[in-house]
Image (tube, rainbow, N blue to C red; front, side, top):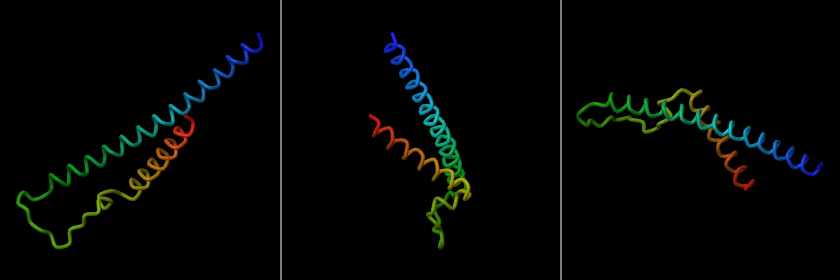
Length: 94
């Protein structure tokens, strides 16, 4: 009887741990989705603002990070770091 109880208790703990990891993964995906939405909107705005006829700008910057605020860049870097670390942890747990 005690073995069965211990088995169920460990199963409950395992499910709880799985739920926590799932929530972390879900919050990371939500943050990435929000950041990608911002990227898409900024790129769409840049395309809409482009002149209809192709004119070459002398000092045009191709750096996409100039389109975002420093806080948005930092959030994206943090989300990427967390996502990468979590994927490494998930791969080693399998």
